[in-house]
Each structure stands twice: as structure tokens, then as C-alpha cells.
Image (cartoon, rainbow over all chains, first blue to last red; front, side, top):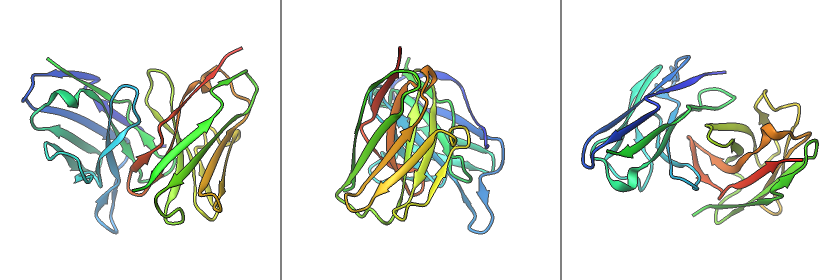
Amino acid sequence: DIVMTQSPDSLAVSLGERATINCKSSQSLLYSSNNKNYLAWYQQRPGQPPRLLVYWASTRESGVPDRFSGSGSGTDFTLTISSLQAEDVAVYSCQQYYSMPFTFGPGTKVDIK
Amino acid sequence: QVQLHQWGAGLLRPSETLSLTCAVYGGPFSDFFWSWIRQAPGKGLEWIGEISHTGSTNYNPSLESRVTISVDTSKSQFSLKLSSVTAADTAVYYCANYLAGFDIWGQGTKVTVSS
């Protein structure tokens, strides 16, 4: 199985400031035949199902604010919230869909400082 | 706009079989793979398995011996059965649509296993 790790476990950021979440996979998620990274990011607010934010490592899902951006390739990926808003308080998780079983990172909790 | 609605028993005794169903509304059932995912209290998400409209399945090896996912294309529904449950199977269970990542999710069903 591909193991997904995230850092930090939690972070507190002032409103309007940048939040950066890192995700690392135990093997490359870059599929050479199409040059795509099989990596997604999710936001999960308490009591709600996850919400897909980013897929293919950097493609924003329709309706997701442009303050959310994904980057990285291979085994190292980053989700950036450029200007934290109150509604962004949530747990953020990465997920690989390169190979089965699909696996998720443990999550990073984002709070307001 | 595709929506998923799921239902099933929320309280089970150890050794019983968990049974959940997810209905797909507002979109094509045959174009996608349909998954079950769970989240134990305070834990991360765990993919259980998936099924296509033809009935082709893939399971997480960690649960494969106890899991059955089935499909009823006439009703645009798919179901999860997990046998011989223990307290470790206590979790919120979600159905979800997989395309590139899981973009549509059911509302979640909280399942508690307790004697």
C-alpha cells in the first residue's frame, strides 16, 4: 500500500494569512504515460463529509475558491490557502489514487490564531 | 447534479453484519465507479472498496475477507455488507463517486458496534 503522511498535524493561522499543508507519499504518484500526479486534496468540516478541493495535484474542483491551490509532483505535495478565511477552519487530507487500495493522509487541522 | 443518499442500520452487536445502501440521483449511474469509505472516530479516512455498474469490484485487502459490495443498476443503487463486525468497525461510513478523486459524497451513516 502507498502510505500518505502529512505535516504539520495542526496549525493555527491568522485571518488573511497563508496556510501551507504538506503531504508526502511513500512512492511516486506521477504516472509517466500521461504526466499526471494521482493526488487529491479534501476539506472536511466537523460533522460533514469531505469536500474535494483539488485533483491531479493542482486542478481546482469547480466552485472551489481560488485561494486554494495545490502543487508538487512525484512524492511531495503542498496545499496552500493563500488568505485564510473563517470558513476554512477544517481538517485537510490528501489522498492518492495512483494504485489500489486508495489511501488517505491522516489529516491536518487548520484553526484561526 | 449527482446526489448520493445512503441508509442502513446504525447500531450493531459484535459478530453481526453491517449493511448499508447508497442511491444515486440526478446523473448517470453507468459512467463511474462507486466507492465505500469509512472514518473511525478521530481517525483518517479508509477506502473500503468500489464497484462499477457492471458489478466489477475492487476491495481493500485489509477488509476483503469480510466485505461484499453489490450493485442494482435498475434502481441506481449500490450496497455494502461487512460481516463479523467488531468494535474496530465503529465509524462513519460514506458512499462516494470516484472519477479523479472522490467528488461526490453521501451524507454519511454513523455505525456503532457495541454489545
